[in-house]
Length: 400
Image (cartoon, rainbow, N blue to C red; front, side, top):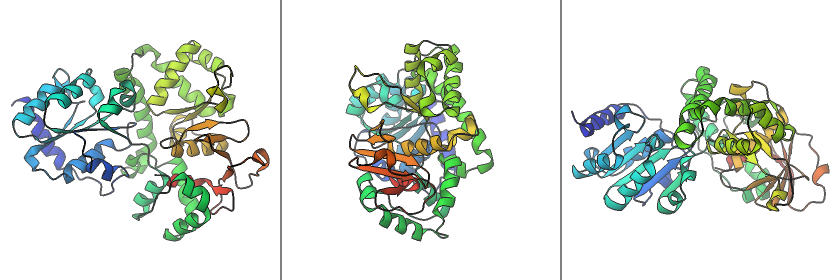
């Protein structure tokens, strides 16, 4: 049996698997994409494979004209991806989904050749680092980033309901009305109960497959990202992966501004320039957020950086307990970073899109630190509905 026949047989087996009915927020954009080549990138576990299989299932082609392959299958280790796709196209192939494309060492060259020479529609998925490894990707192909589940998506899946998303300006201007509408659409109207749950578990779709094994699965994914994915898409020495793990653990147990980069480099046993390179790797792998002070836009000003885990569920897998203030800030950053530019500031916690100032805290958080600052807001945990410039933290989970 040749390679193409084997791939078709594996695709038929894949078709026997039941796909979730729920479709993530990017589904409509991707299924209606007119681009010849469409790429989907994101962290491991966010649902890229499921989303692309849902797209493939609903495209208006005959079944024999479609194909799904995953590049982490051993049969693709020493095969030219271009030659394989060319063979499929010659025998009537019209559309192919290529999963885990970063497993192919020269995938960028292969995709370019397919784009230049073959008449076939391609969807591919890859590690978060893929999008950043070559500037041509964002120009030549239609690229989409799939982040973790938003709080809105978590509620939709958990309760089997449909909820709207809102842009930042709408939330800032109409948050009380929006909060009321959302709460009244919930079966038991207990938004804070669900929010507490989401802070601990549920940002990755596989939570709904096996809740009991969820934290173990996160730990496995962290190890796979560090020991497999990063080695494939960076030139990092395998012996330095333990240093990356030390960095993650330190970020988990520390308040953001308590972390001195000098001490962090010493803890990991690396130099400061190497530390910045490693922090970049962890950011690209979507394990951390690296937030700069807004003053760093001016190169002659030195300010400490803020480091956060990518999302609040990672605390459960890395260090069990985390500071509640850090978790609140982590949630806020994790929900905004996809669409908005975030810096931290000395007056308040965050500056978003160089316009809005946000101070994050509990329900009793006052405006003291941001008093008399234009476009400033308190984002408060443990409240259902806000008032004037005080907005519930949970509502920022409805941005996508």
